[in-house]
Image (cartoon, rainbow, N blue to C red; front, side, top):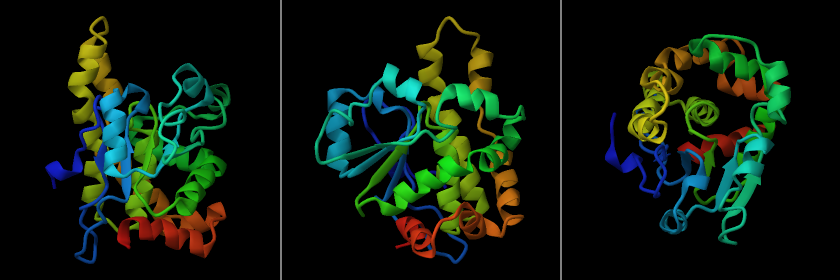
Length: 240
């Protein structure tokens, strides 16, 4: 399942990859060059911004909290005019609200908790993806593993990607981030860093079970209030 084409070189990002090429349950595969997931674009060097533009990215969707975007503004928000920028906080409108809203849970159940607790914000994110121009769309948070990983897993599920591939896409973030984060935070306990980066495949399988209990990905999106044409546009992102 490892395909070097999937991992993108946008200096100095650690966790950027194309969601194309994943196997689907009908024997096909997801579209290349349509959806890209990444870590925080504030890390991009000028060369990285040029690489992003050269890849053809037309839309960037920033999933961070306002507190994070104010502290570290996106280079795209003030950069190339041909790249559209949207900011929609996925985990509640603010960090303070999320701290009050979230429920303690193991990492293996985190995705299920978010699907239950952030329905309004998730609807806004998905509507933005559905309404975006047809060119490559990049979405990201900070590490690009949990908030970004949830949206990626939901999009891959809607595209009928096989469960093992969805779980792989989530789990591989820990590998992508490992060396960079160990170097970035030398004063911290390495074991704490590795635990913070852990992306258990079981979290995806639990998420798939949650979605199945809500009529599958399509049924869950209908419950969120997405229209049929919006769901069709979302699926077309990875299936054409």
